[in-house]
Structures are given as structure tokens and as C-alpha cells.
Image (spheres, rainbow, N blue to C red):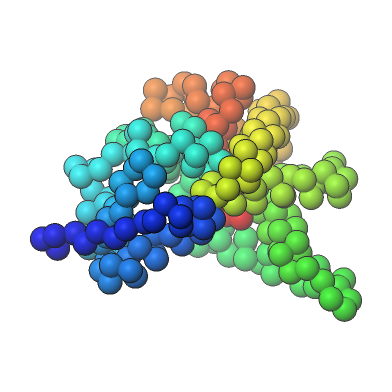
Length: 250
């Protein structure tokens, strides 16, 4: 497109649009009736793109970089600071490969089988009216933990529900109301603390036969220098990566 169409965001609509989250981007394109649109949102300029050609341009490292591009509200909740989405070049690809190596067709089929079984079991226990969102939250969290090699048997139901709710809160608190955002930040911090404890335990007491599961993969991951610096210190919250993996899959 030689000229990108611009749309207007009224100040009176800001609160409503913030609550829309990512759906805001689609609405801007619809209003402009174009795959690319610009708008000024508060003090920032937004450019939203859509389509195969746009994706190619967007992911071309010569056109864009990740470092410094992500809004703080997203880093504090959805992605986490210093995550794989915030680095470029060889560091990005090396870190991303740990994730992608877990996403083989065989491992994804394992996850689907676990999810199907857990969902069927949960639905069989329901009678009359029930809350689908809460049920889905439990099933997804329990399933991804089982798939990742995380043993939830040591936690009581209330603890598991809180851990699952933290994962959801990190997503819902990314671009939303200030109250939900602050809750999302708090819940991410709690979830990262939990992930750190899992990483420490996995390094201290590795389980034979589970080396290729997500928990143990990230516990033994290394940086480009082969020193494992971004995981050997589990007190560096976001660099455990385990929280990210749970968040993506949920």
C-alpha cells in the first residue's frame, strides 16, 4: 500500500477500547477497511497489519527488531521481561529452539491425548449446570503440567486452582483495565516464583526417563556460550522459561 489509512480513536472511547485487548487491532482494520491501518492511542501511534505478505515483512529481521519494542504492560504480564520475545538474532533462535524441539508432532499428539482424557474425566463428574470457563481452566492447566513433567500431586485443590488462575491472569491482565493489569503483574510474579522452585527441584533431583519433558529441558538449557547462565540462576525470574511455556500452551 502506498498510503496507510488512518483511523481516529476518540478520547471518550479509550476505556472501552482498552477492555477489548487485542480485539482492538482487528476493529481498527475493519474501520479502515484495509489490511494495514494506523491510529493514535493515548500517546502512542499504533500500526496494525494483517495477511501473509504483512507477516513476511514483519518477521524479516531487517525490518523490525524485538528488543525494546514490546510495551511494558505486556512484558509485566503476558510475556515476562527478558523473554524469548524480547531478544534478536542468534540468541533468539537459540532460545526459541528449546521451545520448538518440544513441539514435535509426536509430543503434540501426547498432549492431545492427555487433554482428551482429562477433559472426558472432568465432564463425567459434572451434573446439571456448571461453569465451562472454570472447568476448562482446570483441565488445561492439569493437562499441560502433566505433559511438561510437573507433578501436581503434592498440591491441594485450592493451591492448584490458584496456580491455574495465575496463568489465566497473566493473559487477561496484559492489555486491560489498570486493576486487572496490577493483578496480572502480581500473579505473574507468583507464577514465576513457583516456576523457579520447580526448576531448582528438577536440577537437584532429576527423574530418569523424563529428560525430554519441558520441565527438565528448561532446567538443563544453556545459553550460546554453553554456560547455561540464563537458567542456572533460578532467581532470575523470567529466564526460567518454564512459566512462558505453560502460558503459551494454556
